[in-house]
Amino acid sequence: MASGDIDDQLGSEVELNRLMTQFPDFARYYDQIEDIPISTAFHIPYGAGIAELGTHVYVSSDINPVVLGVDCSRALAYHEATEWALRKFAGIGVDYAHDPAGHRLANRAEAMCAARLLDKPLAEGWRIYSRYIDPQVRYDESEPVRDCPPDLALYPYPEELRAKIRAAQS
Image 1 (cartoon, rainbow, N blue to C red):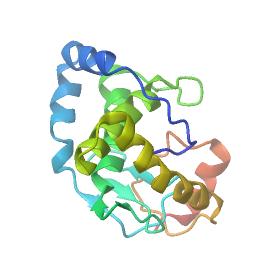
Image 2: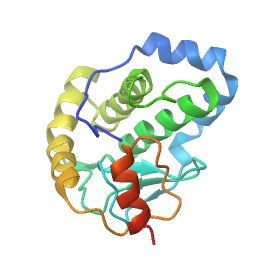
Image 3: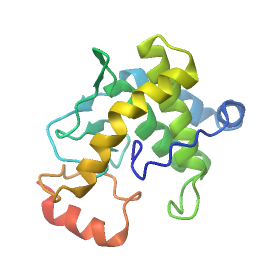
């Protein structure tokens, strides 16, 4: 959920690197995030999501990921893929509602990517990026659930929203 609940706290880069050392499968997956396909053909609650198998990322058709003329959809992909991989390979974020570590580490990955894409230092890039993306995510959260992909991972969503997503999966 890139910026999904607008918890913009960044996990530790040191911790992210430590986890890559501790969990080689996580590191291998993380190194391939640049190549994960991104689809913008669906409505995705909270702005972005990932396929159950981690094979592709969905950015909501309601989100315009262009920030200062730069397509930042890859930053959203870094968030979703990092969150998924931490859950799968490191067991972090399995209880999404009570374990913010996975989300915050994914925020770190998203921020690093956004800063790189915008050619800004981390704090400045994250601030600029969040200023554009967060209001769109808030708006997207208020939209009725519709036209969701059939393989959207449901783990980050509350149970009441999962039922709506299942009904809207095409």
